[in-house]
Image (cartoon, rainbow, N blue to C red; front, side):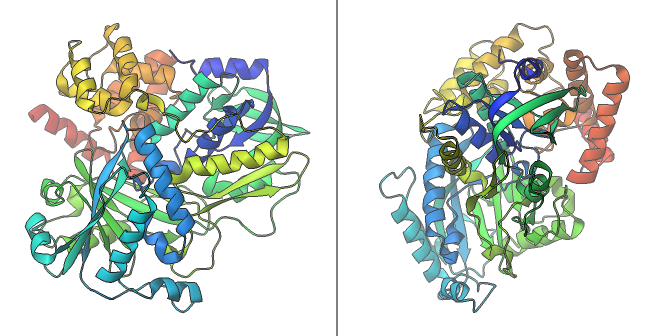
Length: 573
């Protein structure tokens, strides 16, 4: 059993001296925490909320090379993204899987000059892409991966063949093109697995969520929010990996005050999860990657039995928690209707929504799609040097972490000891080529096939440890009738994965909320399991439930009435 959060606090009390403190426990912060720890440094990761709870919890859930980045001339970013995509397919096959992606095309030559116009500053918003520029882009995509090809080359289809495969698509299309990228099932869980791997491989390093860090003389103090404990910490270097909050954190951690100009210029991206069987069937197992009328790229793909649709791309003035507003929901739904005019889709099909701020580099581009998705490290002076991680995206988190680690190692005069591009992640270690083999092994221990499939899907080869724990307990019963997640599993996750709040469990350690499965009964059962493990009294347990139900309504479009209706549907089923 991995050490729990109490063990982390105990170690921090005994020894608060670190080579590096990483501030921000999103995917980039976790990535550089792992990277530096594996180079022999003692590293502390501090996250003020939960791991991967900010922007890292709100991606499009694509692991991709960035086909449209070619139009911006970001060839190095595309090469890097495709390399990292392929590495994740190998290192985390339990969560990152190939995704056939089809582009419906209505024109032939349109968009040929998009890249040149953008480069010369002649046009901010690109023209709709036609068949020829898409063909050129996909040829470059294939060429980039020619030496390590893991997936098929692209192919073009004429309208008749396209409509035969996707009869619900708009009849206005003239061609379609299919290529392969990848998708990630549980991005927040992958972040936690990286933290778990680091605890195993570099036990001197520590990661703490729900904690605040502040300057204190020549050092810092870390305040543990659940207990109120205030612990002194020293560091030789600070890595600022706070994403959209980077400028705010820079000012509070530095002894030199604010930077002359902000580094981050964020945009807001919102997504919907749709329970629409007709749309799910119409996708034919593919992601549909298309342009809306305003030139923004939209996506639709099958996700955990539902359909993920997105996204918006709206400038934001300051970092804050955001939600999908009604006008954004309507924008996405209208885009879906345009590409699939024969499928009835409405707001009633939305079972969950989410939104986050993309921490992009500061830019004066009028069209947000022109803002680079690249990343850079900005060193800042001071008594304790601070390195700011600017930009980045989910796919390239390891490469960004490697780049940042090399800068920090140079500052500290330390050599690189190991490379992480081939390092398996969590339950991806030893994962079988045929996942059904692991499912059969788990089911052979006396559990239902559906539960075995869930465990293999969520934990990979770590499923064996989860099942060992659960089968030894008397509370290994489903949270709700017909469900596959049990109270014992909730206890396992609470004990071993730093879950502190009910929302940690139901939003990030499990996919119950995003799949549209969470109900009042499930919320109550999960809260009871966590209460027994964490020592919550009745008042605290009720408060956790109230906070989570309010959070679902305020930020995810799931009302109390929807939760109660799911209970009623479950009883009738």
